[in-house]
Amino acid sequence: MDLGTAKQIVEALADGVDPRTGEVLEPGSPLESPEVIRALHVALAGMNHQIKQQTRNSALPPNAGKAWRDEDDRELTRLFDSGQSVANIASLFQRTRGSIASRLVRLGKVPDRQSAFVANLQTTSKVQ
Image 1 (cartoon, one colour):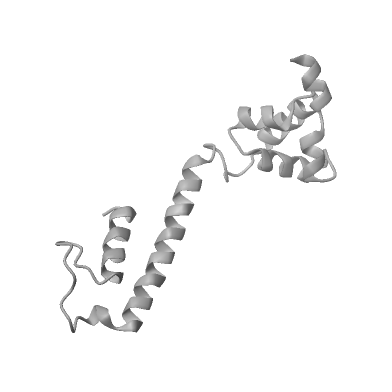
Image 2 (tube, helix red, strand yellow):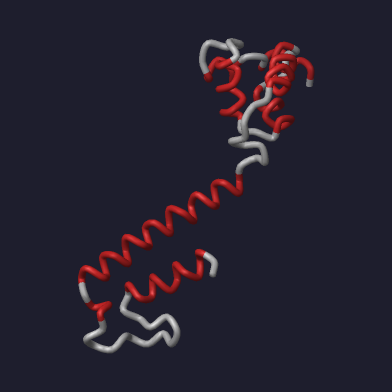
């Protein structure tokens, strides 16, 4: 069962509705208990968070979060030193711009992430 379907079922139960029929649940159902209703809403909040994470992760580039190899660091250094922008490098590495900026800081190429984003901008605008 996918998360979206599970969420619809839990939402229906939290609203006091039978998810199979759409009818209001019989009086005396355990689902009328305030504790059960609160627990269902906690479960819904967790599902919403998980759905949001899945949506975010599916929008990330393929190499986001993967470990950096020594050869990646050498290529990153070469591209940056040749005047490539963070955006261009991120596209080539299929990583986020933030990860490129962070790696440049780690490699000592720039003092902070913000510096990485503005470095090479004049060089790349002249090249294009």
